[in-house]
Length: 68
Image 1 (cartoon, rainbow, N blue to C red):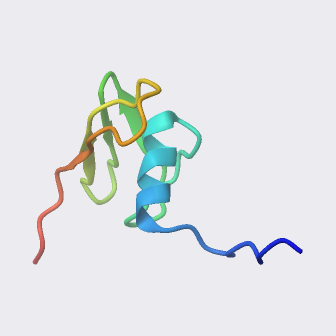
Image 2: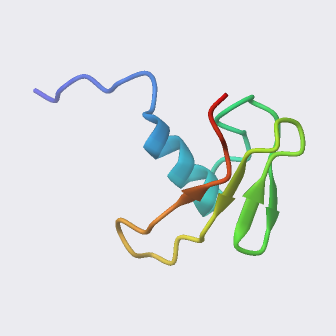
C-alpha cells in the first residue's frame, strides 16, 4: 500500500517549481511571477529568486525577501 500523498507542497518544493518554470505563481502572494534570465521576480510583492536550476539536485536558491 502506498503512503498518502500530501495535499500541500512544502515551501522548498514551491520555490523549486517556480525556478524550473513549472509554476508561475508567487509562493508569497499568489500573483504571477516574471522570469528574467536567471532571476524570477513578482511585480506585486517584490519577491525575487536568484539562480536557475540546471538539472543539478540541491542547487542553491537565493531569495531577495527581507523579514519585517
